[in-house]
Structure formats: C-alpha cells, structure tokens
Amino acid sequence: MPEEGVQLSPKSHLMTYEEIYNISKTFVDHGVTKIRLTGGEPLIRKDIPIILEKLASLPVALSITSNAVIIDKFIDVLKVNNVNSINVSLDSLDREKFKHITRRDQFETVYNNIMLLVSEGFNVKLNAVLMKGFNDNEIIDFINLTKELPISIRFIEFMPFDGNKWDMRKMVSYKEIMNYVNKAFPKNHIERLQDAPNDTAKNYKIKNYSGSFAIISSVTNPFCDSCNRLRLTANGQLKNCLFSSAESDLLTSLRQGKSIEPIIQKAVRAKFKMRGGMDTLDKLQDPQLHNNNRSMISIGG
Image (tube, rainbow, N blue to C red; front, side, top):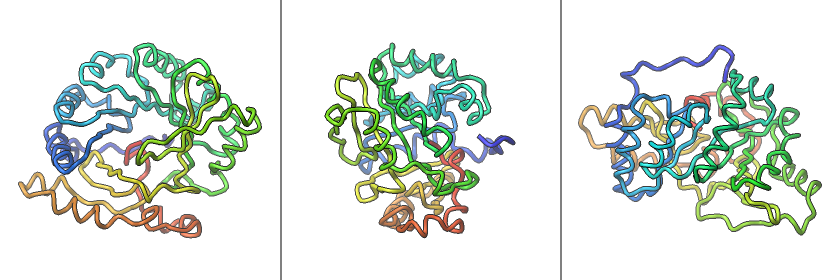
C-alpha cells in the first residue's frame, strides 16, 4: 500500500452489482466456469452480499481473495453462497513487516481470521509475494505453517507494475525458492504434486505435512501457454493478461445497451503469447513496457 494511499474512483465509474452480474453472465454463457472476486478488498463493498448472491446463481465455482481484516463478519454470507475457496494476501509473518507493507497494525487480526477460516472448513490459500532481503528469510516459516494446518502457501515472484519500484534484483526466483526448500528439508521429504489443468502454480508438499506449498513463477517460468484467465477491473475494463497494459472497455458499451461480446472476442484474440508481449527478460526490464500498466492495487490481486 503506498504511503499516500490510493485515489478512490467515483461511484459512477464503478460497476453496479447488476452490471457485475450481467457481464459475468456473458462470460459464463461462453464457457467460463470459475469466478474469483478480488481487490483491494472486495468485502468493503456494501453490496457484497448481493454480488455474491447474484454470482452464486450462475453455474460457476465462486471464490474470493481477501486481506482477511474483516472476513470474520462474512463467514455466514460466504457459506450460504457456496464460496469455499479463500485466498488471503499475507506477505509476512512478522508484525512489523506486515505493518510496513499494509500500513496497518493488524497482523494479529488477520492471523486469527486465517485460523477462523481453517476451523470453519474453508479451503485457504495464503499468497506471499517474495522480495529479496525483505521476506525471503520467511520461506521456511511459511512452509512450516503447513505442518499442522491444511492450507496452501503460494509464493509469488515479484512482478512489474506501475508504482511498485520493480527491480529484477529484488525478485526471488522459482529456482531460489527451491534452493531454500532443498536446504531445509531432506530431498525425499519434498513431494511434487500433480498440478490442476491450467494451474498457475507448481505445487509441492512436505511429507506428512497437512498442507502444501506452491510457486507462481510468472517471471522466470511463465505458464502463458496454458493460461485461461481474464480479469475485469472494478470500472469494467477487461484485461487479457496481468502483464499487459492494454484494456478493453466493457462497461461503456453495456451502459449504452450494446453487445459486449465482440469486444470480449477481440480482446481474447489479441492476447500475446507470453507476458503481454514481454517475451524476454530484457523487455521485462524495460520500464517503458510496464510503467503504463495499472498498479496491482487497482487491477485486483
């Protein structure tokens, strides 16, 4: 979270719950089978119970990404709408580091809510973006959480976005993460799991541990050839790739009563083969190619 906070969008620029449903239904009608609500923090919307209810009426698997600060107030709402999968953004297990990243002194609240989600039977994944010299020394601490807890820890390579001061030297690569793991655990205790179709993560577990861990290596080992994800921003812009700065405006056409299907079709066909066109590390390190992309805060985690 930037120290100065983020600029909020006028309400009129954001999708209403009816518009979220109508756009989602169009995607579902064309084969989408999973919808994840992300943020920021999706639970701060006053109409989130209605959004969940509307989306739950569609034939999709519904999930959510949260910072888990207020999620304890929504346990019943999530359950009644069959939201079983919860991703929680948690970049550090250290209270001071957590406070530095989030600008909130609420680590205990988040940790307790994670424990609550587990006890209530949710499928919980913790997303940790690793940065060299900041939280890479916590990799094994995170994995050790899975000894008793049936959760998945997901280590995410630091990716370039507007305003996040991305530097290749700050990134902890897939190879480096596994070096930490191989030093901490006997080789025959590190189990490679079968990845789900179109999975973004390479999944592992430690033998006899309750949970698992995974690595999302979108920089050093991109999974673009099997990626089937699309993102819809809060103001109705379609992104065909997280790395791409290109967006397609669905909301304006929807409000004008026009079909959004041709826009979606064009956007999907325009998807680059790799990383939004940044198919080499040299291109990835060119600020001109990623500084025009939104910040991750305004895309959605």
